[in-house]
Image (cartoon, rainbow, N blue to C red; front, side, top):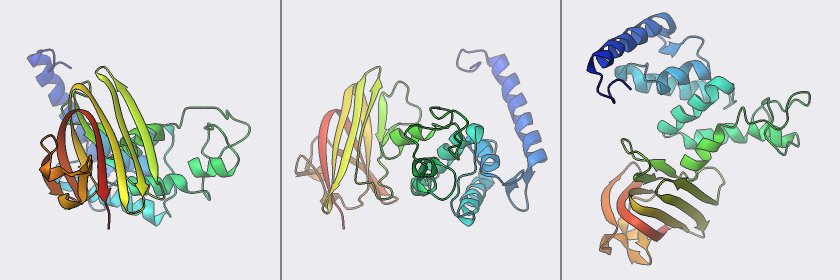
Length: 264
């Protein structure tokens, strides 16, 4: 905040303090041999990763150890109210939305799927859906954020403010066949609706006036991506930015778009 409002002296002071705290934290809680934090719990891994406490040189090792620990525990969800949100954010940033889906669909261990299997019709205060605590409680509702940014696909480009630069990147995970998502911003509503239809993915995207967007489409062959039944490489509006990591990224201005993506 000091940097944003031009208080350079305070910015330097607190920046130095933050680095000293980070080093002290890592010295106390990080095991450089096993590359784990504290007890190696999901929360112990996720919070330092989310808050940038982990050295960049070993960040990928720590992320991989988190993912490995989850898989070794049969994808059981063990984070609680404090750590659960950071677990979701860390896994999503690491491209692990499928793992998020798997963890939260289980019915044999406490979690969302378990609550549903116990007959819950609203979110309960405890993962285990205990009857003697609140059974209409938002405390563990952090997955809602992922619904918007994961399957819903609506995110913000890094460095953007007020969603003036939008990222549309729907995660087609698990057995999901459709998602309809709308997010209301100061500029207007952003919409990302998609559904699987035979061997196609149909996407309806709306971007408000005075905004631009990057659309990340799960297909690497531009010859299989259409907008209003025109190949995107022939479009005067949709601009291909790059093809990488199993996706084609395109830039678009404000407006409404209908994409059809042919899948294998």
